[in-house]
Each structure stands twice: as C-alpha cells, then as structure tokens.
Amino acid sequence: MSHINVTINGRQYRMACEEGQETRLLRLAESLESRVESLRGKFGEIGDARLTVMAALTACDELFDANSRIRMLEEELDALRNVRVVAADRARATQVAVANALNSAAERIEKTTQILNRTIGGGVAIG
Image (cartoon, rainbow, N blue to C red; front, side, top):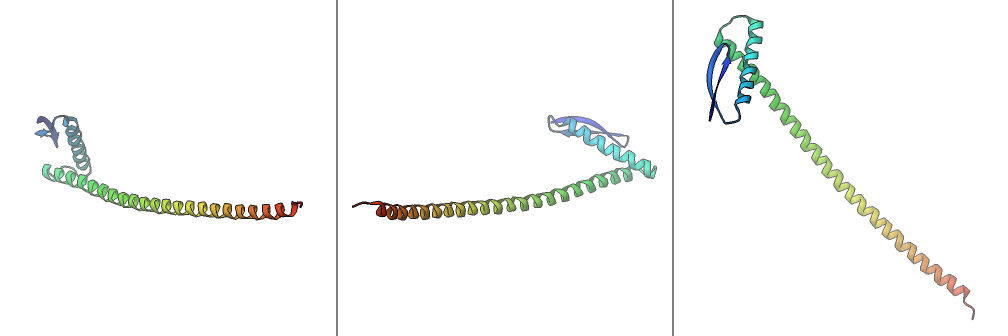
C-alpha cells in the first residue's frame, strides 16, 4: 500500500492507494482541484466545504452521464450484434437456397443431356 499527499482546495490530504496507482490518484486530485478552482471563479468564496461538495457533485454528474451513455451504447451494440446474427442466418439460408437451386438445375441439365443423347444416339444408329 502506498501513501501520497494530494492538495484539494488548498488543503493537503494523505491518501492511501495500491502500488502503481499513485499517478492516477494524483491526476484525480488535480481534476477535483481544477473543478474547485473553476467553481471558485464562477461563485467566488462561498466556503471551502461547499466548493468541495459542488466540485464532487459536478464530477458525479459527469460520471452519471457517462454511465448512461455507456448503457445506451451497450444496448445499441447488442442490437447491432442481433442484426448481424439475423443477417448471417439469412445469408446462410440464401447460400443453401442457391446451392439447392444450382443442384436442381444441374440435375435437370443432366437428365436433359441423357434424353438428348438417347434421342440423338437412337436416331443416328444405322442398322
């Protein structure tokens, strides 16, 4: 377990994180600090706790929107996968139908060829 110091709204906090996650935690703290500063610029000094809560709510709002978008995209992906499966099934059915039609045509051609060979062969025979 690692420990790092982060600064949020001018205050330092000692935070624990898993090994290798230090940089990520620093970036998260910087993002929250940036939100606090942005809100301070919009609303002025309205209290440290209030600015921090508003920044956290802003981050949660973005997370909520992102999660909603992810769910919508997952649903769209599932629908597209279903369409692909239906299209693949339809393509296989078409291939089978075409193969059957070609086999049937080949059988008719063979039968016609046999009839023609008998007819021509029978008419040419000298006897």
